[in-house]
Each structure stands twice: as structure tokens, then as C-alpha cells.
Image (tube, rainbow, N blue to C red; front, side, top):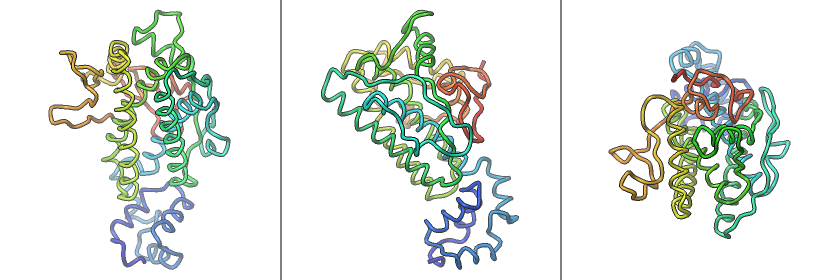
Length: 317
């Protein structure tokens, strides 16, 4: 089956899609390349320790597994939020192990949904996010990072205060009711879409790029659904404040958009003048989830930082 693969593609994918030998072997098996084929790759000078592989890493920035592990941290956060809100419990013990500092989750409880549709939508998203965690962990194999420490209590209080939804010293509980849960979800969903789009140019393996594109599409469906529900419930004003708060964290550009235009019309899909979704860098995404415009390695929803090599936010203030 080795003959069916472009050798340059295989070399690039092997050298950049994994951070350890175990993950490289898993990629070879997934590509249909057996032991003999793997030996042939090494003989061609395409192994992870080869000069070609070293040159690829030096020239191309973060490895594919580093990018996917960054995405996995975000999926851990989303999965814990939705699973706890819908089912009253988060990921299982066998879904959170890996390299890096494993952390606990603070906060989160089952939401009493007021509408049947709201509960059905939340259940679907929760199951999607759990599946994303499982998929990325399987794809990464031995290179996967563990779930970092996540705070769903203090972080939401800080985020709601920064957005002007509550006053300093007050509390915002996203699990108190359906409307609050949707507003809490709005904090994440648009960020996830822009994060995956921003990561796309960094992924060199076409296999992994296609998988990331599939996840991006699902996150976009989620984001559009959350924005639609918020608008239908008359929550455009608080959603706009959350959008403004995100915009204050991720740099000087005014990119983030609420769910209504200035003329009051619906803005379900935030796009530029060409109707394209915008991108966020990993550093900008971390500014939002760390809840700081400054350079940082922890804070907000990740009080001890995310796991993996991509872990530092940008200095935007």
C-alpha cells in the first residue's frame, strides 16, 4: 500500500504529525503502511530523526500534534461544560489521561432546562464535544495531553464581570437556568470556530487537516445554533456584551461580532465583507480563555494553564 502514497506527503506527515515514536507508528498503521513499509520510509531518510524531518520541523513551526493538542485542551473545556450541564457529570477517568499535569474541574452541575428543544440541542452538543475529545485523543495516541485543571466557577464570575453582566462581587452561574447556560456557551463557541480556522494553515498533514476541518464545521454548526437561540430568546444585549469582552482581550482589531447588526437585524453568522469567518491565533484564543489581554501562561478557565507546547497568550495591553 506504500506505493499509493506520495512519498513527500508521507515524509512530511510522519516528521510533523507526532512527537514520539509510538505516535509515528500509529500514523503508519493508520495510513496502511506495515512494518516493511515503515522500514522503507526510514531507509529513504524519511524517519522522524532524519535530516529531512528535522528541516521540516525547523522550518514549519509547531508540529501537527502540538496543534491538535492545543485543540484538545479547548475540547476538554467545552466537553466538561456541556456534559456537566446536560448530564450532571463530566468526562470519565479514561478520557482525561495523558502527558502534562492532569487537573480537576471546579464547578458545573445539571441544568434545569425550561424548553424541550433547548435540552435536546444541549444534549446533542454535549455528545459531539465528548466525541471530539475521544477522536483527538485517539488520533494523538501516546502524544496526547491530559485534561488540564479547569475552573467553571471563578472564571465565569470574572468573565461576566468583565462583560458587565454583573457587578464586582456578584456571581454569575451559567448552570442556574437555560438562558444562563446559553450565554455561557456563547463565551466558547465562536472562539472554537475561529481557533480551528486559525490553526488550519499550521497543519501539514492532509489527513489531520481534513479531520480538523470536520471538527471546525461541527463547531460552526454549534455556534450558529447558540447564536440563533440567544436571538430568539431576546438575549442580544448580554450576548453583545460578551462579544465586546472577547474583543477587548484578543488584540486591537474589532473582529468579534454580537448576534445583531447595528441596524438591529440578525447577525447569526459573523463574517467579514467577503462573508468569510475570521481567524484567531492560538495566542489570541488563550487571551480569551485565560481572561487577560496580557502575555500569560495560565488564568481564567485554565488556572494552571493548558497542557502542551502551545500554552502562552499574547501581550495585547
